[in-house]
Image: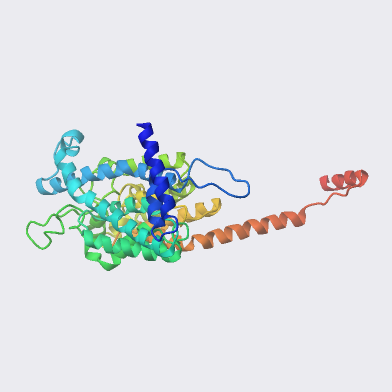
Length: 424
């Protein structure tokens, strides 16, 4: 087996030399590096070779997303059958959730979203690589997995394809490709879908399979999210328990419901040093702070039950973290190393504002109570500004310390005298 693998690698290496000066060289090199480690070596200077490269980094993030993808496939079927037949009185994970019927719904609804996302996105990447004559970049490997997880289950495939083309071209390629973009490509795709096709991205008919296909008919399936219910009806009374919200047995975007799996994925990314724990912690703190402020306003009696903001304002501040896409956005979107803040202090500010603004948008925009993607896109734009002022602040502090520093003379006696004066 090993000899065959080596022979296959040698044959690819020979073909790579034949493609070297041809237009399709970037496309062939992409397949070559997908299968094997690049055989390029440095030619000048001293270099330290690390075990991780962009491809391995992207694959690590995908590994953290696989459990969420599998859970979302089961949840797609569970939400569908629950909406049709009603929620089971004695819920069992093995008998009601992890079943072939539920998984089959996930196969026919979730997998096509993944295939279209990767197929269209990578095609655009290949086209730009051939036109510009540069190597195909692995940055879309994660974006291609994120996009199907942040859209409603009934999103039409053609609509997703159009959005992916827009997101890759406008969100990344016009800035120069991976590592140069200022906006998160996956969130750019989500923003395009929301503003171009709002009826497919909000309401109570899009979150459960066959909801939108039967809209306007007596058989329409309603799968209103918790945030949507609170924004429209107010109060905190709904049929879902805290356990349902935390583990993800609720309607919502395909992969954003299970806070439990999102936390596990976040810990995996932190310990593998892929994602910044500072951004995660500060974003959680910002969301809790804004939630506490709104709860305080309600407790003080400044907002009554007749107000359209009462439902989400009175919602327990800590529950904001286990419903909607806030947790998913904090772990997988806000921590994007390209579009986020680069300095340590900037990461604290950047993350805090994301959490703070996300809950603010939820409350003050009842028509669309999920505001995390807007908050992250907004902070993507301001991340360079935050880093600029953090760096300038560090420079000013160091200059101040330099001006106050005592320059010791070379002579030993004068040096001792200067030290005594400084001590006094």
